[in-house]
Image (cartoon, rainbow, N blue to C red; front, side, top):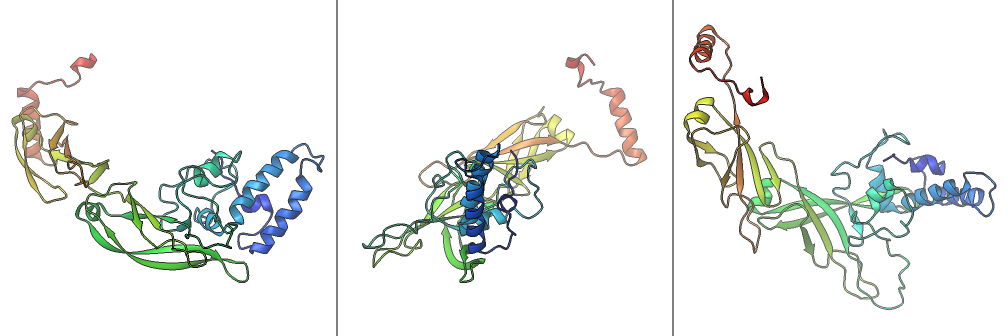
Length: 319
């Protein structure tokens, strides 16, 4: 999909105030309204303008959009980075952005269904007491904390406009208890940590969506854990017992004779301990590693093996 430069669409600077954005929208909306403008592309320009204003008028959407950085060019091929909105606290639960109907795929990928954005809710009738809005945010944690559980100090950024209309961020610190076995996509509810109640009503809740950071050793799929396990050619041919790292510590793994690269050996119950379910498993994916022929003796040994152990691994390919 194409990147959209919303500031260029509205003709404002990236540090424009809330009032400057509002004035620019009103001016351009009058200019390109399909009922007024005779320009051939008036309807398209008016639609693009509405989409840009939907983002830049809202401090939450604007701060998240700005997080993408300044180096993108309008029309450039774009895919949102997986952690682009981590650490922001947003109003509303997971849902569809208000007014998103008919907006571009670019908008939908950032703020559409499943992206966690909703209208800020300031137009809610405030005459009667009412519960505050739920808020949500995304946090990234280590695989070790997901396995063992932890109490983490989390700092969230709350976008808002200051009195001069400039976009700013208020930092909010929380202590969050991570239960053992949490998996990516799991939501943790912090009761009463959302928006303030109206006229004495109770506060809303804060939902933290947890995602696991990439790990140098392990790959996680659901509650199962995978690790690439290097073995020697003789361990593969003859079999043997090797030590394998797991999240709970090293364990012995028996490798049968005639093992193959890519073969998966299961370590039952060594994955993530999800509450209320059997724990996940760990899978060791075998990778046969040949030692280097980096001196005369080792080269001679390889040459002897080539003579005494004729073997063509490409025979099935006709080679």
